[in-house]
Image (cartoon, rainbow, N blue to C red; front, side):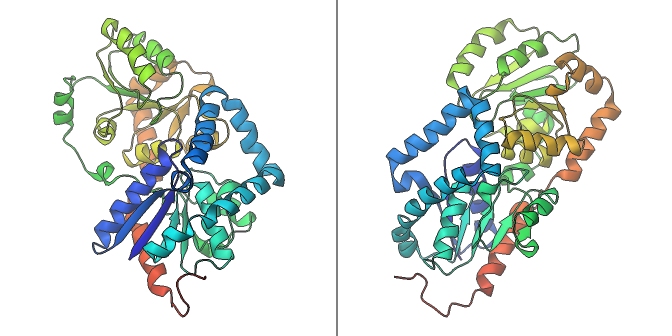
Length: 381
């Protein structure tokens, strides 16, 4: 099976999902050839810099504006139309690679890419199965396009809204968001604690702001540090170098034992030894925490997509929101001091977790490619 995955490096989640899909396909079908394309960068590095740079700048410095654009796109066709015209132009640039790689199936892990492969399918440029993997926990119109053969989504709650938006029920597969296989490996807790020189008899709080290290991490760390409860902290600043340097000045004087980390691939280990995760509700981070059965304390959601991720978790009792009016101290008191409450949160995470998402997706890909009867040439001229 030859698989071509289209993604865009805006944040970390879309690319991480693509990497996870690649791993599972190669495990389940070892003779497969899987290629991940950073789509905009491939088409035009300058366009990629403008689009991705604008997105990152907006969510960092003007998140409320991003939220307004998110809502506007749901209610008005104008922005959607602009996106469609842009992706219509871009999609034609993908054909040389598609023709040379000759994939059996196309996958998108970013909404722009979903629209691109939709356009190619509708125009008859490709005649193979197309799959969109949504990397959030609620649908948005930018993800949903005709011509897509399968939509892999994180949960059953999304299905009714997608059906109302014109997506056929039989095309929706609530397998979950594929996460790195490392999250399915059970690491010895004592070994991880020993590596970090942490106390196995103390609760561990994990604080992170996604790959980009966004949100009010410094303020939350200060509040954690001032708690009278006895626990230890792991802070992951991601790729945010400025935040890391600022925390470096604070951590040595902390009242709490703290391990400060930058970008790391050992998040699965750290989630497994933690009792609570303070985090932004990014799509992949949420999926990883659920698989790790780690209760989430949510802060600084990006208006729009992450707010809806938060709503999903809160609706099912797998998280607590700092927007609820509870202080950090209140949250810690009501969880660490009440094991039954922590157990309830953990059980809710377990109920929502989809650890087999990657394997289910791999099976779906095989079924779609095997069912495809190639009566015509792979690509139109």
